[in-house]
Image 1 (cartoon, rainbow, N blue to C red):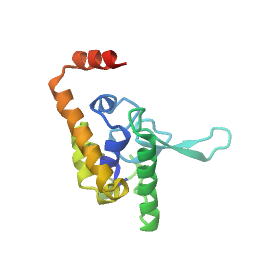
Image 2 (tube, helix red, strand yellow):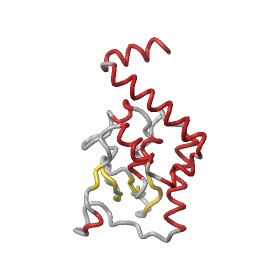
Image 3 (cartoon, rainbow, N blue to C red):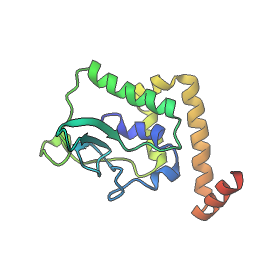
Length: 161
């Protein structure tokens, strides 16, 4: 959970990816988890017949990401939490604890990249060379998308395919 604002820069790695994030989009727009709540980024799924949790769904990932980077970083975040013996925050909507306040995810890809720049764990996972390349490519994509309207962006994408 601590790394989620930075992690999304690797798992939903484009301005277009962020267009599907927000309240009511069934992806989650805040840092948190819940059981069978489609509005949280991490959803614990309960098998209706068995009556107990069978899997966890991470919903802030799309086909634009490099799946190897995404998996390496998601797993590294989980492993760090386990190795540091961190306690999972309360489920969203169940606690008035100040540590479980509604922490909104950044509104766009640029803010997620800014979070990644400050996340020492994820920067270590990427390594210096890959990290430098990733930032260069993604910053170029952001600059290009800032110059284009949505229609121009779609037309450019369709031309290349």
